[in-house]
Length: 194
Ligand SMILES: C[S@@+](CC[C@H](N)C(=O)[O-])C[C@H]1O[C@@H](n2cnc3c(N)ncnc32)[C@H](O)[C@@H]1O
Image (cartoon, rainbow, N blue to C red):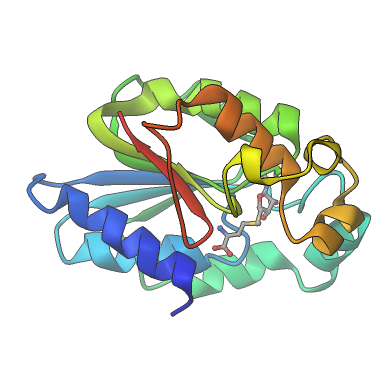
């Protein structure tokens, strides 16, 4: 288990007292995070909604080629085939957000398009879908924005993201949206309790 997985499991435990918890995520890829949280939920009669268009990151041609070559979608469906509580919405984040009613999720995880405007949009679309007291969280946030060179924070080119080791779009969008007191960043995961 990597550090992000550990953090996600810790966050899942905040729903221990919830009967039939409901979790969701945008950005599923081959299903790693979905499987991990799905297994945790299966033991608690909970459900997991996985949303992905399975086209890879739209600003990363390398990622899109990979998505085609290894047929991510097929691998994903094979990986989750024994998980009756994982429900897949093979569509864009924006289309999926229209389907769910507000205050439905006990935990929602953002790990889709990592560009600044896309992360901003995902936050605004999915935050209302989380119950009061529920966990709203996401991946690839290394640190608070004030620890990053402002020039790096504005980088949108994904090849430079890798070089800098941070996902500037994620860090910037998340840190602009939430107060420092409310926002937790641990092991690459950002989260707030609503
Ligand atoms: C970083 S990967 C997700 C990794 C995954 N959570 C895991 O544990 O391995 C990002 C995923 O987001 C998906 N994605 C990107 N933009 C999206 C969008 N607008 N709507 C739905 N899925 C999107 C991509 O297809 C890709 O599979």
